[in-house]
Length: 487
Image (cartoon, rainbow, N blue to C red; front, side, top):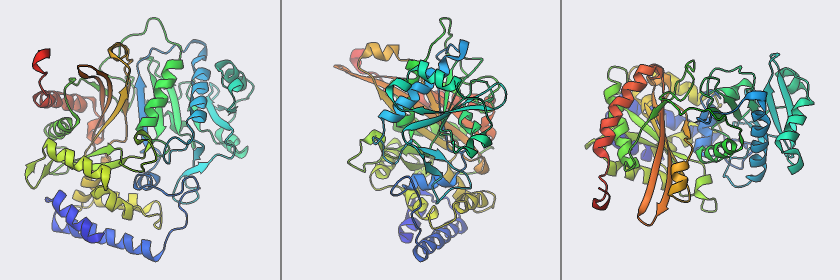
């Protein structure tokens, strides 16, 4: 494996200094030696074995493992009836989707330092209930256990269950053995679309309605589920909520004006393909980030759904991550090279899979790999390694297929975003695209709902606007022209 990793790093990152290559090889060699000398006991009490992606996520703090969706629905929050309707929908989905997804059980709560093994997911003590929490105006939480039975999962029944419980603190709930899996911020305690699930220490889903935009904002822990599950649940919840009659269309900024991590809408033409969008994103990042990026060759991380395990439907497999550099030995990366990298990652895995499978070994303390990455990031000469592996950009796409062109036109906008580049390596942007398509006799028709968020200096609104301004012409020149019959 070490020889394969050295060859892959030399080919994919030819700009690495010799000290960076040697340091990465030495680190991987050390971790591989520890793994062979001290085989790990079972690293998870939830799944049989952890994928490389899950190993990586298990070492990251909850504040990094975030996915979120924003839907400008104009939710009617009068009387707070929306919260029981949301919880009833989530509980039904949680119950009915068991066993469909590979290593993505929601019969769990999340532990911190008190975890057993590498995996912070802990099995729920009673899989016949879903433990939920609502923020309360008094400063505490209403914590309830919802039975997963049809009669108990109507909005009225959920509302009655919540009303019957007195508010308490999280420490009191933990003493009673209650670990909320879902939290709804009805009291408006949070200020960000990204962090509602962090209001409790154990939740994998948080929900809030932005008081300014009326948008439904759902925040997820990426370790518990990947994007396909997030999108399915988000769409189901949206269909169950009451809406105001006077709702307005979403503006440029999809999150509220006080959100510390703003989300900016991006328009994409129907005929742009993913590999060309990847090239356009890297070029736009370099041009808008001149003087800000710490790398001479920025890299972009791209989630892909792998070819295995074959017995699991593709949409429900755990993702792998492809590393796409802005330049290779042959010059600026081409769309064809992007396709090759993605295909290789889907099949055999990529260079990141090789490195992470060793660096994030269950034999090592769970905090060591993250500390190593940050150590590399702040060390001149080694910063190249951290930047290449953590990426200065992320590009993600989730596809939703609808029945016909009428459904395509009527599709309610749904935007998402996910883990942004580490500020330690200079930050960057995460461009996430919801692709809604339908198949017709004349081909495939599409609509895109895209949004960009940033980290480090790219969190600033003016930086996101500058990136979008650079992206637009790059996308335009790479967009396929329509066929002659459609001109």
